[in-house]
Length: 313
Ligand code: CP
Ligand code: NVA
Image (cartoon, rainbow, N blue to C red; front, top):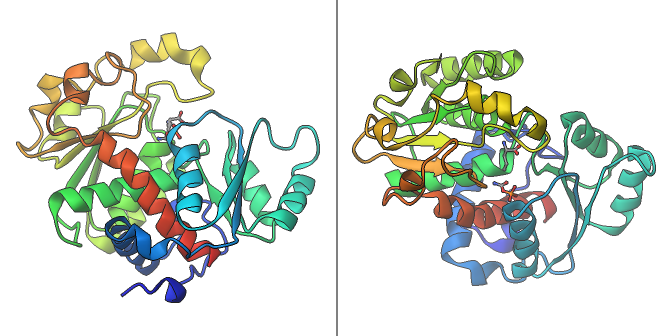
């Protein structure tokens, strides 16, 4: 079904945000990710001779290692550099150096404008590995995980609830979940709502797919009927100086036994990781039999392999 030499190429030159893939491309990617996971050896030479350049302004465990392994396991290679982009020399020069050496770029950045700028100046595809606005590679792995858990290709009728900060991870999940027909609820404190422009986009996607969007300060309303309850750190990378004030603002937004019990009895717990136990989530929920956090981490590898196949071949 997915002969390695006949993979569908994305129409978009880059993957800078979730909506860069069409609905059809996204569904194809998810099917390809499942196939790559089931039969990794079939893709062992799919990226022979290709190299990925990775520029990270922030630390990473999962993203860095899964991109490196994805390239290696498909016959390619990668080079990695951590540090600020566009300080030692202009971003437009960085992009035009890298694109002479590698077949694709992956960038983890503070500002979305940095990854957008790399794409503007680079002749090779650029993939967003997390910015202030989005974490689109995470959303791919998360949807793969939800599909595996709740069986079947269709996500219509499932409800994904995010508790906590209306941050990059929440914004990517909201866009990706709603366009695939999943109901999406966000339970977050006042002052930590998602970006208003992204909410408008999300409402538009929900209107098309028929999914429901709920943004509320009421965690019980958010988790009621949820198939998946998701959370993320209260202070993202770069917000460490706000940690004390955020701990106060988010104290009633912890995913704990009492809150998780209000979701469906078969609900799964999700977290992009790294997690801060006893802040956004208790140890009991991280270690819960229905916690799928390590499935999500595993699927980063498979979903990103599918993405690389669709962008670099
Ligand atoms: N979830 C995630 O992106 O993890 P890293 O920050 O370790 O890459
Ligand atoms: N929202 C978190 C996600 C980490 C993977 C951050 O940006 O730090």
